Length: 207
Image (tube, rainbow, N blue to C red; front, side, top):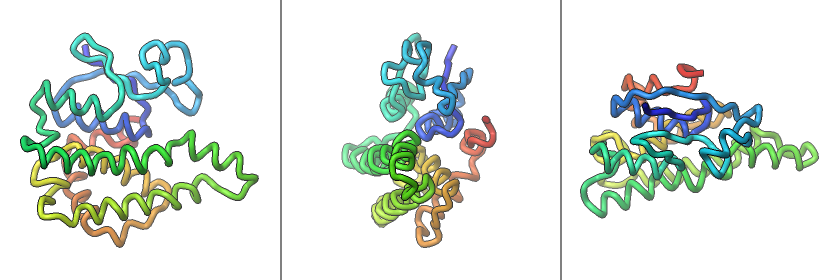
């Protein structure tokens, strides 16, 4: 039995819902409510030492960290989330990390909330998000100006970078970030959002 310990608005968990759906991998979803602090509870800490989501129980193992899990799925399921060639893999990882390691950490809910609560009212959650998400996505847009960009972030197959992009754009929209000057991102997102497996992973569909 495959079990995903999930929070519907977690970008990292959203990535895994997309990946599992694309693979047609059946799984049970167990919610871990971040707003109520369930991620810091004993049950979640027992399976995820960082006190985070997602955690995936798969193949008799307990897996954490969404990008590591995406690579595991690629290696064990032939998912095609990473290209066959080393240079292509390096580019897809760079695109993925630009979101997962640059935008996501600073815009994590706990980080944004800390900034808001400790600024004496000078910083709002929305103001924080609108300060950092546009810069990160603008850089991602520039990275897509590359001959290896195709119908998707790298070539014409859905890969790890696309799986990272979808939740980040969801968050951008949620916080009122203007994406109108990012045509490459918008074109790729239009294609991605038309795919049933990706649409089914949307937070509004799983909440």
